[in-house]
Image 1 (cartoon, rainbow, N blue to C red):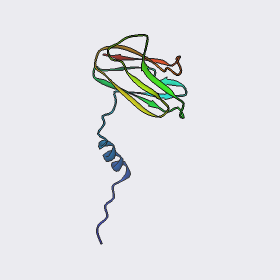
Image 2: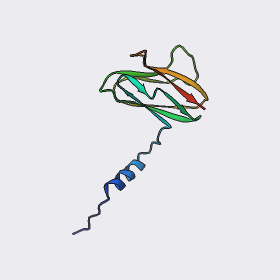
Image 3: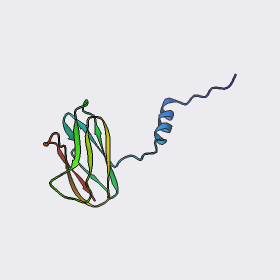
Image 4: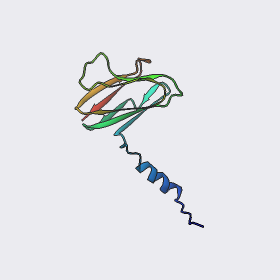
Length: 111
C-alpha cells in the first residue's frame, strides 16, 4: 500500500490561493443592498479596483460617469453576478455610477 499524505486545511487553502495567478486588487467595492460599499476608494497609479456583484442577482452596471469624458473610461456591462476589475493608469478622480440605479455613485481617487 502506498503512503497517504494530508495537508492541514489552512495550509491547503493558502497553497491554493497562491496558485490563482491573479493579484489581489488594491481596493474592493462590494455591490450589495443596492449600494456601492465603500463608494469612494483611493488607489495608487497603476492600482486595480475590483467591484463584486453580490446583490442577490439584482442587475447593476459599473461605468465611468458618462457625463464626464476621460481617457481612462471603464464599463462592466449590466450584470447581477461576478466581478469587474479596472486598472487606473493615470492620477485623478474618477466618478462612476450604476446606469440601472442612477443614485448609486462613487469615486476612485488615483494618486
